[in-house]
Image (cartoon, rainbow, N blue to C red; front, top):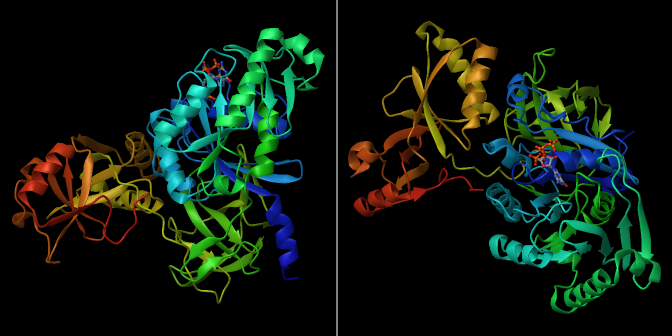
Length: 541
Ligand code: G4P
């Protein structure tokens, strides 16, 4: 039976697909775990990550992740709450995050930004926020660790506006004194929620009591002074603050802000409920064929991540797709535009933790892992046969770290080249070659240094090749062109001895230099040279 628009509308309205963005240690893993706890997907918090002794999360697949105790690759968690189907796409939270982190943000409909109440807006949050802002997706803010001393809520609102350029609207407001908050005032429902003591160290849901704002029993519980401060704060927010405007939230111009503590389950449930209420379901997507509506009965999806050998027990390659329209069914035949081939989707998988489940159907907003016979690339579109189009191309993330890579044993060059090609296709690394160089060595560019460890590990484990890796001192890459369109060759450039002249995979000329200062020197010496952060025919993130 072909799917109907009616059925699609039913499913779409239930879907919430988002990622959590934050700086390492702000509490992303803890909050994810608590959302799963409240969603009933796990029964006792603490199972995702037994910290310190065994620092790894359910989403850790590769051995390297376990060794380092960090999440290298993005994972997908799905659960139901209050009639909604929630898809959380995990973004690697380590300092050395990679292109994967950015690309995950292409597949979501909204983002949750966690801010540590004591630390405020940190470096990685800023970078990830920028990508979300450029996509114009709604961003919800969760100020975490309210059980500890931290910055004053008003100061944080100010900081978010100054540093990120977005106004915030507090959905709730903490009650009591810094470090010892007793509850929150819910501005939408105009009521107070006071929390019972956390006796299970956040392992179980936390009890709370609801009071009207003018309830004397509430006043008695929190004390005269706290009550007066609360009433003053509410007046101040109502008078001087921004009005709540869902259109502005949808356009990414206003962020609803929640205060809570993921560790002690303070404000988590309220956050989840409000988030589900306000966050958007799957939206239309731009394509070469105009906007593709999610309730279009014709199936379409795009690949946003490729991962090989996720589990040593299954030696395989998975392409993760985000469904954009229509209904996905197991064993369906789809058209892969890039290769101009029809592909049967035989072993679709969905994930919760390390369990893989073969799925029979999925809907717009859902993420499915497909067994990849080696034809899929990042950003590829798949759709119903006879409907040829491409979704908007992924933006390019300029590499910032570079290394020269070669096989230790020259006899293994063939495997080395195969492995390098594979990892480039997966989008784990960007590949460059020095002018005149063969396949003995490559210059590899990445967004974070962790990718080099992943490269080394995977070449050894999957291709049996040991490599020699020499980090290069460059931090800036610029694609080059002459104003008059003539060919750029190293001999025609002045002052480039401070950098390295390389070609990308499509033979576009690129210059690698140490820093912006060196770049200034080169632009001064070559006034007719055009420089771009990414290839001239691509869009920057
Ligand atoms: P991440 O994924 O964003 O990197 O952060 P993660 O959840 O791993 O949390 C980082 C640290 O912050 C952990 O402490 C965690 O317990 C703590 N944390 C998370 N949420 C809260 C909160 O609401 N309040 C407080 N006080 N701490 C919080 P750790 O010392 O690394 O581990 P552990 O010994 O606490 O398990």
